[in-house]
Length: 301
Ligand code: CP
Ligand code: NVA
Image (cartoon, rainbow, N blue to C red; front, side, top):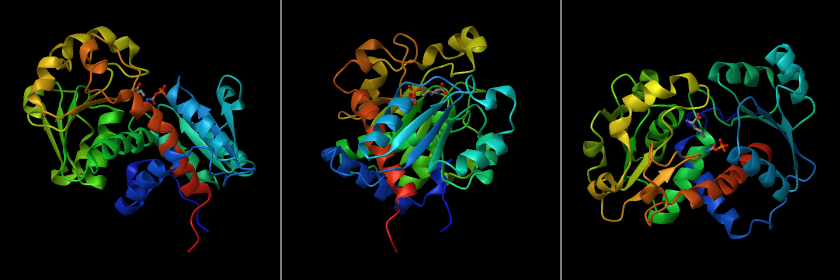
């Protein structure tokens, strides 16, 4: 059988993605009931820091009966220049799936092309698809469905924003992106999203009547040198109580975390009653368990 990768949300069809979210909600009801991955191993390559992604994949594999290996370039031959394709070929002969977090979506594609087992994007410079499974799960749990809802993204048009754009296309919601000029999401991503995504520059316009307001850090991992310049560019883009009042009365707030209170979000919002960020973080575990089962233990037929 042909192996499948999960490098972007376009690797699964809309109905497959909806099934993953449904499965995640089921798995959440009893996290220790299903052990279909006994004897399977997930290798996890982290070229960047992580709390949620590492702990959710490692715990998820343990709960499913399998095992996860943490690999850092510092301790493997990847850090000493072994070609990424050679590493991919070797891991593909030993483990049952690989997760990669790095700064280069194209390197992930090269890795996946050389690897005989499924490869999962645990975040790259361009996308963070696993986070979107958890985010959509969180919205579905709260609202019953995301279809035809309106989500406002306020801040940087970064890897998370690109993934929200693809999620809008795949799950059938509208995304309004408010970002400073020069910080828009990738043009080729937008070109694949049709009228599901609108880009604007005014946070209040994006937030007007929205069902959810979402943001992320102003300087992503690897952009530390731009921190000061970005702080100035994004000053008017903080999600605060005034912006939340523009949204629908029952609107919620999401953030993939880690967050910087007082920068992209006010403490009163992230720690307030409309914030779903802790359920969102927990859902990384359940959504990725559904993904791991789909990739390593696909239903017959
Ligand atoms: N949201 C997220 O991916 O968190 P980590 O960087 O802690 O994995
Ligand atoms: N945009 C952030 C997301 C972290 C989970 C980053 O890439 O650092």
